[in-house]
Image (tube, rainbow, N blue to C red; front, side):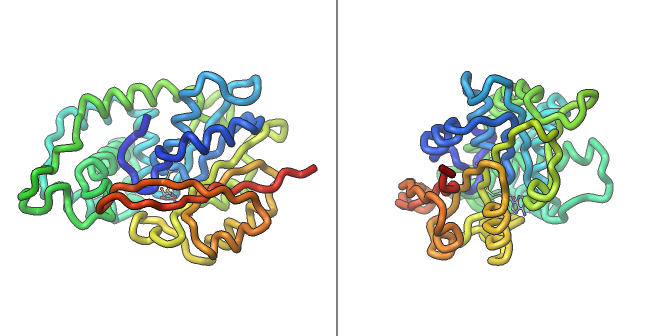
Length: 289
Ligand SMILES: C[S@@+](CC[C@H](N)C(=O)[O-])C[C@H]1O[C@@H](n2cnc3c(N)ncnc32)[C@H](O)[C@@H]1O
């Protein structure tokens, strides 16, 4: 199940990613760069995951717009669905939503505002060219809607709401910092999870990391990485005691940063602008003897 079209979604790599993750034993799955959460959602749906205890999930993304979407799906489900069901896509909305979502974290941080941002974030990925959201130059079908594919061709409100209902069922799996509170979703920089252990020491955490692509990250995400951030992530991963799996685009710089790790090449076909064959990398530490 995928939440929405999202650049760099790992839907196509799940058959390679899930078997690796299932080799490990853990209680907490930390989706550090969750995006559309394709890996977390696939694991949540699996009947059998490693370990005997139910797994708790940390869904995190630095993009506040995306955070509000996850938050609203889990904690304001009906209000979000109502907005989606009452909506009809319009070309001018693409540009308005793009402006609204580019402002970043709003001062007026109340629930209604949070649901409004979540709604706009979801819609803009449905109506934008290639699902690129705020990073797209135009809506599907262009400004004049001359194409055979119109702005609403990927917008199916009933189906979206069914997905939201299914995802909402996993609310009980969200990591819960204290027994008395509901679980939560997170809007942190990746470094937070290396510097703060927010779970009890007897829990075993597994980190799945899918950072912005090295080459195309700046064209795809409101939050992308500088070279220094790619280096910092590599440094943190080399220092951490947690088990981890990392996915990246194939670039000599990335291969150099992880030259002492296990690097698996996965061929993938992408269909943006025709069919393109690419290689993505799955990287993990060498197992200790
Ligand atoms: C390749 S995408 C993740 C795609 C995701 N695995 C999926 O299947 O949809 C990378 C994500 O990292 C997020 N991101 C960028 N900089 C970040 C940072 N410093 N800390 C945490 N998340 C960040 C972006 O907002 C983006 O959603």
